[in-house]
Image 1 (cartoon, rainbow, N blue to C red):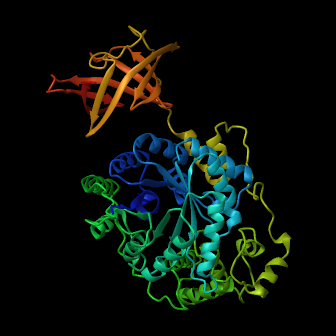
Image 2: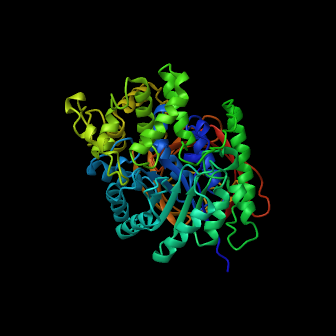
Amino acid sequence: MYNPVKVTDVTLRDGLEDFVLKHLHLEDLTRLVGLLDRAGFYSLDCWGGSTFHAALTEMQEDPWERLKKMRRALTHTPIQMILRGRMLVGFKPYQDEVVRKFITRASHLGVDIFRIYDTLNDLDNMALAVTTAKELRKEVEATVLFSLSPHVTTDDYLNLAGGLTNLGADVICINDSFGVMNPTQVATLVNAYRRYFHQPLRLHLHDNHQAALTSYQEGIRLGVALVDTTLAALSWSYGPPPVESLMFSLGGSSHDPHIDLDILGEVSEYVDFLKEKYRYQQPPPRKIDDRLGPAYLPGPLKEFIQEELKRRDARDRQQVAFKEAQQVWGDLGYPVLKGRILEIVGLQAVENILAAGRYEKMIPSMQDLLRGRYGRLHSPVKIELQAMALGWAETAREEAPGEEGGLLSRPDLESDEDILTYSLFPEEAEAFFYHRSQAPLPLAPAPAAEAPSLYPIQTPFTKPRLTLNHKGEEVRARLQGVGSRRQNQQVLFINIQDHVEEIEVQMLPVVRGQPEYLITFHGETYRLRINQTLPKEQEYTPVFLEINGRVEEFLIKDS
């Protein structure tokens, strides 16, 4: 029986971090998304998580604008994003109003699938996000994080999956961000899940121990419907395995996903071009995480501790800090070391070895974790530690305005996106808004002349029905109707692939022999000029259009 596995590409969020989060600017991102759109992936996981904060701080770009541009670049593939439950894309829990507004706005701007998880596997922290996305009729992938805690059993995972399906989750995702699951553990969890639930199951496994591909094969054999991969050109040891390897391992089987390898080749060539463009030096391969026994510490946590020790000029204490981190992790009951929890364990371990005694100074986020601010710790916590946090003087830290994660306001912010960005990251947003205000404004277009007719675009576009072929992609379009004029702009209603779009057209004075137009579509304005029209070849007429100064070739034929 033919039963192809559905593959989601997570490269643009979970690929090689040094490159993806620091070098892929908006123009490069939209081009890459457009190429991936043709490959045949089930969805593109390309927004949310760490990408939101990185866009603000590393790229100095509006993360909402990146979402809008990616949405316009995709015609076949759904956009998928990741949400940290109540933390959304931030580092602390937010109030209900912020959670609802963020998810609603992301939904309206093009997110089709919401993958929702919580760093503590706390169902209460995920409930509002799941129900809000379901109310918006979006697909929800609710996530169960795999834990190394000896106190967590298969029944615990099943209970969480049951709670999430009761909330309306369409898909359950088993997430192992440290690649510590082996094929036997995958088989145990998949068999147990399929015994009780009918919702499709996804695996999101990282390749830290180079076992992800084998684990995927075992899971798919037992009924896993969806898996996550990256592109080989941007894969790394701490990310999911390459899609090319998955294609090779499943090729010819009933589970072959049939991703277009020719398109993947184009994508790889473009990635190589971008690496050369930014003179990117790929870091050497990381050593595979070794021991999985009692002394095991994930590689990302070790790297976080190394950076913190370097910042505090204490690099000679590295091995001591690693051992202390293992103890701090154990004191907390071995919660999943993901996101904010990983940072708390690392920071507290460094604080412990630099202070006169263990927990002599407890960092504020550690206190918050033990007090339950981030959710419920499901594993047994060291009693003395919890008592210390609960009895700590509240005067040690003054809460800043908005610390409780409410919606913040600023008089000069008008758009919902800016208000949400400011509410999530006030300091980073302030810096970004200032940077944006200093950017040069685009030149104002020349005064428009009156359009010679209601439909001013000239041959070969005067036909009411057209088929446009661009880079191998065919698009059918027809003039559905002509609306009223808005100042100097003519409103046209164009049926594109059976979906009616409103387009505003403004004709500019003829300067270089050919008329130029300003085309406004989905809020974006493009300057368009017919550069050259060649004689008709067979059924197509080759036309070269200059769009915002860039020449593109289209093949036009009457429909």
